[in-house]
Every structure is written in C-alpha cells, then in structure tokens.
Image (cartoon, rainbow, N blue to C red; front, top):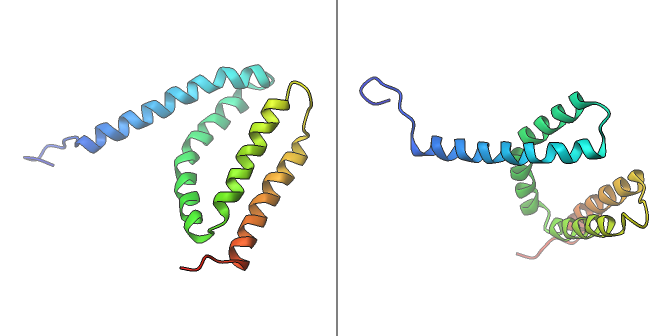
Length: 122
C-alpha cells in the first residue's frame, strides 16, 4: 500500500505469468485427454482443474520427502523408467492399469523402507 493505494509488486506479475503458463499447458492437455477418453467432458475438465491446483503443492511435498527418505530418488527414477518403457511398448502390448499401480506403489514403498532400514551416513 502506497499513499493509501493498493499497488501490485513485481512478485504479483511473476505469479500471474506462472499461473497463465500453467493454464496454457492445461488447455493444451485437454484435447489429448478427449482423444483418449471422450465419454464425459465434465469429468475431463474438472480433473484437469484439480490437477493444476494440486501440482505445485505436490512438488513441495515431494521435495520435502526427498530430504526425509534418501532412497526415494532411486525409486522415482525407476518409476520414470517404467512409465517410459510402458509408453514405448504401448503399441505392441497393453500393460494393465492394476499392474502399473502395483509397480508404482510397490516401488515407492520399497524406496521408503530402504531409506529407513539403510539410512545415509551424514
């Protein structure tokens, strides 16, 4: 507040640009989702909105978990490699969603347990 007037700081401009960029990427992903699952537009739009709202918060949560669990980075690397492999073989073989969920959940669980059982020596 300057001279009784509310003014925008440079931080406001930065936050507005970041949010606008998030919105552009979200709008770009909506047609791709419609190509995959065109059944219910309401579900597709609302799921994208909630994904945008939660993405930044999840980043900070994951960043804190990386400090707490030292082996989590290896688990996340394996998960990214698994998802990449799954995308490459998708035209030739369908990997069941339940199997993918078990691999991701199991990998996260094992990496957390490994971090607790074998802590890094600081």
